[in-house]
Image 1 (tube, rainbow, N blue to C red):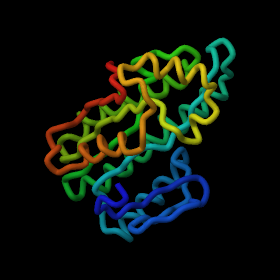
Image 2 (cartoon, rainbow, N blue to C red):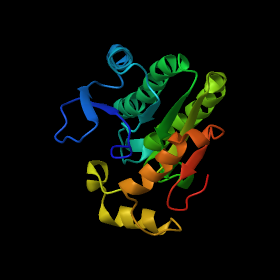
Image 3 (cartoon, rainbow, N blue to C red):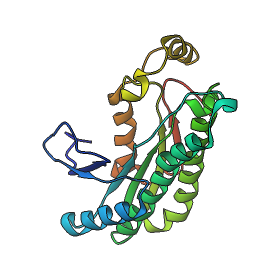
Amino acid sequence: MIGAGYDVVGCSRGPADWSADGYEHREADVADEKAVVELIRWIGRERGGLYAAINCAGAASMNHALLTPATTLDELYAANVRGTFLVSREAAKLMRKAASGRIVNVSSVAVPLRLKGQAAYVASKAAVERLSQVLAVELAEYGITVNVVGPGPIPTDMTHGVPKPLLERLLESLPLKREGTIEDVANVVEFFLRPESEAVTGQVIYLGGATG
């Protein structure tokens, strides 16, 4: 969204190691309710409103279900589900004042592919999808749309630790047998954000050719 004419505020649990025109970074843990409430209220005060919220913070884990501790499940749900819920809830409160808004959440092709060794991760991302679809129904009366993009593997810090054979098997299972790019994801997100997309809500678009 940076470079597309949007005034962007992003957050993470620590400081950003980069900068860009039109971007301001804030430190906040999206799983911390108080931090999220304060962040969105700050946006309302300082920016006068909020047009779109993109929930792309997340965590992943690769392990057989029998070897996955409950603490891992808690961590995944905190980042992937709790964070998405809190930001969406608070963002919608601000968007409602303008009777319009866009919320875009991030899932994964791991959901339709039902990837072995990622039971906890897949469960958390499936929860994000269903949460988004219920939110789409609840927020429609306020002119707010809620949609989901599900990328395949993209070269990021999250995928650097994935064993190469596993990554190759994943790519082989997709019709488009290549890694995704940030641009692939941005293209779908920008479609969801367009004013002309006001009739598009409750949808999940997977990349790489995966189907639900």
